[in-house]
Length: 553
Image (spheres, one colour):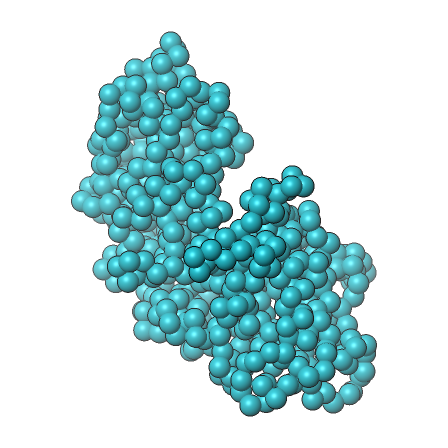
């Protein structure tokens, strides 16, 4: 077993990591050598000017690279933003990259081997981050950020909600996260609304129907799509009014709760944590979904529909209504517009239902700080220098560098804002926009940096329905969501993991069975009682305690 792990680690990482605590400035081993005085005067006096070091140093890093990056660069060292970062800081980074899709396994093996690199960029999930922090493998970054005029902390101090999401209950932080923050005209902070309901506008026009805003109106439209040959091809039976993939949690918001396994089926009602199946409205929600399924409004194969089948139904003139991400709209549109005369799609508001108002079923526009990120080894000789280097990425200049790349090459300044050049938007070598970006920046992927809203608008809002979708979806109330960045004690985590796994599995299975009619909806109350016996009330108490601590940060 040990030999197998060793071989896999050596192959996956290409070359073994040298222990971070035994490196000299040239990167060679020097066992027992005291820490070199490499910091510049700016590091010593608490500043954050560049370069960071007087004498060049070499550090080692493990970086999780995305498929688009791998297609254009062998290593992050070839990406323009990292080349520039090395020039500015005086710190050379020797990168090793696990195979795409094996990042988590390789990180775990590197940690288990005891040969952690100086820092790990990406590939750290929430559970692993907690483990590394608890066993002392990584540093509490806050201890080092407080030593100088930190760019990262400036961002957090400017945006109170981002700060609440970034720091732990005790004020610590163990990973530089990916952040995306936009200030809206009303003074609120968040991000673009990037997920929501879409409908075939030309089908509505064909049948003389208005855009539905309520669950009842949506039901009427879906029935018309099924019965009245909405696509006008002469076959009244080839339309699928409503398509979905595996779950229907996004619809539950119309009933005033959030039914997502990603949240442990937790939602918040005026500061009180509850579970979806305990909501007074949940039975009606389940019954309605079953009714739509029985009426043939919901795709009969929704539980097994994959991405390919989902897109095929949209672009082959079969799907009338669905939920999707903003980024996919342009793909659907470009594929279908030449095949389907008059093809038109439009975003709809999140439906108002029995809850009496439009609640959002997607938390994307309130998530500003993402879990995981970049961690620094507690054994590294260059902790201060690495923290300062990574902190630079969150400065105004670093944000521009890591979002846009190199001025007058991958972007130019217009009216005080960066604008991508044709080398990105219309690459002469035939690269996609994402691939071209990956030659210059880290904008593609959830990397440790601050995403610039202007970057997102240039890359994502390609056709009018995409910009319009944000404007429509963003109007919904966003108060139902349990905070993703709430944290739990070790004891809470151990209890919650067992309770939540069992409860989630049971509810997910029973809900699907009730929708498709394998299990009668009349048995709803019996299953709720079973879930209570499995510890639903104790789970609420644990998640309520964590929620209260989060709100008091």
